[in-house]
Amino acid sequence: MIRYECDRCGARMTPNDARRYIVKLEIYAAAGHVDLDAEGEDDVAGALSDVVRALATADPDEVEDQTYRSFRFDVCNDCRIALLADPLAR
Image 1 (tube, rainbow, N blue to C red):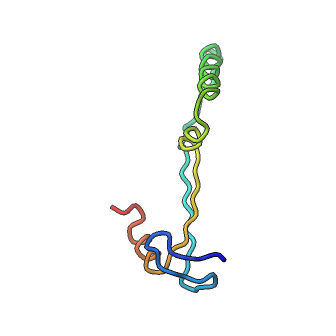
Image 2 (cartoon, one colour):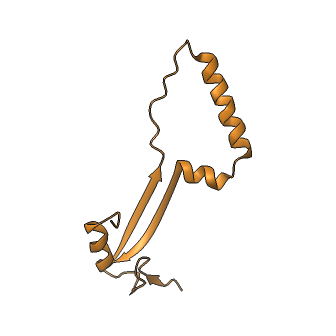
């Protein structure tokens, strides 16, 4: 049996509860434009080789944390209101 409760405050909810909301959060690297000009072609190849070598020995979870993560939360109406008012909890 699946139990629904608010991931923020722990309030009990039901599967069809009209006051149950889903919050999705995505965090990903904001990579900028990479300029691959002909003059720096050797430097680009060397840089890519360095990245490939580093990835070969890196922890996959750490690499994922640095590039992309997504989360899904169930929240009650009170927590929905609080998140909308201050999403970063400042």
